[in-house]
Length: 151
Image (cartoon, rainbow, N blue to C red; front, side, top):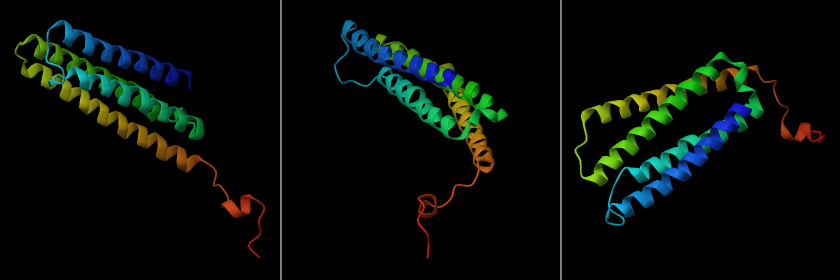
């Protein structure tokens, strides 16, 4: 659980930092405010896919002990590789856009690889979750658990 919390905190810091970079870099380059660049997308990807998703996974870990599954390790590393690759390519492409330079197909290819890793990571997460749900003891219905009889 500490690894998940640390990763979520790291993504929160990097996500907020990337938002600051986006604002200050575009201002310093004389970029028209509100004009499109992928730098803003990196900010939201890091905060949503990194920070928020990992906080949700932390809650799932607390409830279901997902890390007992071998799939969880695969999820953690594959998913994080996807977040890092995708966000790095958004930042790289955004910087090139603001500087008025051409992007290359390589950036799109690496970003696509990042999305593949994200997708695979999510599949591993659901495999771990399904295994944990099957492993979890059945919970009694709410009225029975509260001591209310059906008669």
